[in-house]
Length: 205
Image 1 (cartoon, rainbow, N blue to C red):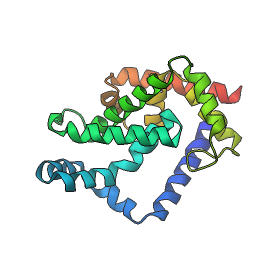
Image 2: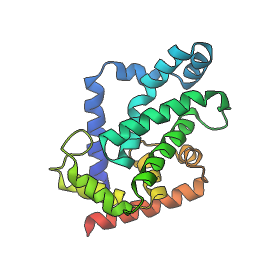
Image 3: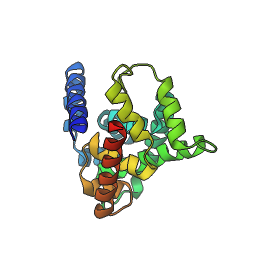
């Protein structure tokens, strides 16, 4: 578990650095979902601005961890927010607002991946994409441990990859991941356990 613990520490340090960079991040996190929903229904444009202020960055990074490249993540995130805005009338509060948003975002990412993977396996294409990435905020190519971990994650089956990212990176509760992936809490826990073991084994090997 030490490898994943190191990755967790690095992830939290990066989050702390990002928080210091932008003063609006504290404001973003204190916006209540109920206020966003009410504002979208009262004043759509203003409500959409609040939605973007809180969720644009986490949704972008959630999608990017799945599709890898910035261009693809940008396209999928844009499409996801259009769908979220257009679907607001159908949101009934049966799940948390965050889980509902992540479900739409995940579906957009997987839709893009399925189009991209007509003749190439996820493992092979994920590895090739990772090789092409410059060092940026997504992953430090000079950090061998981080690169190996990302390769291992990209080699996971789509469902396990989504669950692992939501739990490990987004730190979502199991119940919200279950709602976001249209699954059961038991299935989510099983997928996360399997994914974590595969990632650890791949890094060690």
